[in-house]
Length: 149
Image (tube, one colour):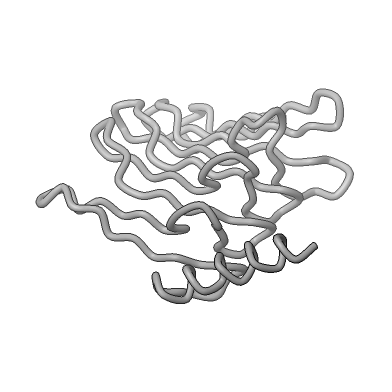
């Protein structure tokens, strides 16, 4: 299915293949604006084959935002589920597990200040913000429990 702007330029195009709905949106200038994928059974945004389910583009065609979803929730097994880029430079990453900020092997939120080039990081476990000391205690407790088995 296609939709059009008042000037008859293409606004969006929807294609269904193997229960995967792909919606491609265009700016009024005709440039690519966004691509979204959905699972047609549940009508929820969903990533297939580790491809992002949501991608937006700058006016120059570069990717701006990429998101991975698992049946409507931000989620990705092996990498950030939300990536923001500016001028071909990654400036933010967020790691999600089934819709909540979560990462055990590093920070769940990483933001890079473009001016200073410094990383600002936040740690989350199952959606709850943690500091470095909390994480060390959790890791030590987990390792101790594993050794006792």
